[in-house]
Length: 416
Image 1 (cartoon, rainbow, N blue to C red):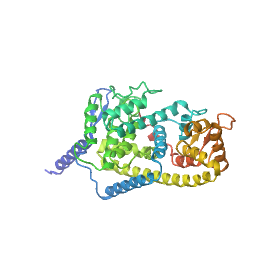
Image 2: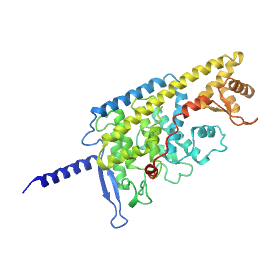
Image 3: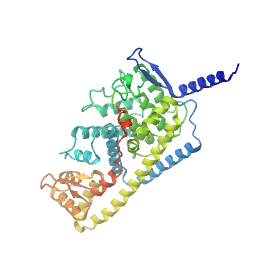
Image 4: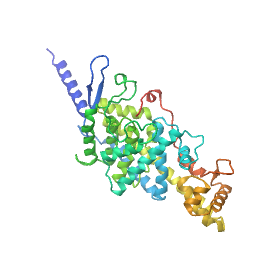
């Protein structure tokens, strides 16, 4: 009797065990026609360990180098001004992934109390994403809270405490089953862990984040934590936005970036179908290396784009400052308004006067002078309640924000 079938069966069972041990397992929650299986991820770090060699190692090195260049480029600009814009760009892109229609221009107008024609509910949601990320940065920098489960819950509370999603238990881990895609768990694309498995999985995530299982290369850590958080899906809503914030916050906490000058949502939005497929292969095949390959490419792409943007802004500010300095006696006042425009983009004469301690007529005169030399443009067409935009800066920041629409498969993958 041939032993080949027996050996083959043993190899298949062995492979299934390795995949299950590395990925996790689907656990049946109900029997009968309404039954469904929820996925419980294996703990971090993956076992067997990540194979960071060959082509994956090269991609890791390229991504780390690109992030280093971004940090260097950011040092040429005022960090506060750069952070102001990059956080807003990431917030817009992250919210667009989840269905909002607001643009960077909408958000900036809203923040200047000039919102006619903008989707108010959408732009308020984006504004809360900005608020949540700024809150997290402040807590970490002040030493009030480390990057932890407690901070993650607080971020979620800030994100959802007002507005149309406030009923989705802000700041609390879910106490009911959720799912992605479909109209019920039984026909969903993916069903995250049942409620009793959430806290054990998050406890492991937090310990891994704090290196209790040994040190992990920073980008590898950020990639693993993001994927694991998305798989656990611990909140009823806002998981995607919180999970994407974690990437930037980890890079800051671990010292790769001084501030989160990083809009990873751009790449995820442009490659939405590949993003979901890579995450799903971790769950079904234990393919952590495939996910990290996608993640490293995303990090490198976004870091290069952000570096190009930072360099373009530096050149723009240098060129336009010379134009303002040429105003002669009016240059001193105009430079104060110009500095405000660099960090706000949309500025009204009233805001300019309040922020620069200039008189309202002087602030208006400075803006009108900058209109004449092509730095700003008046966008309302009104004689009162006028609003001026630093057009070229907005174009540079908005240049990479337009992403291809999601494929039909990706569009059916509901994100919450």
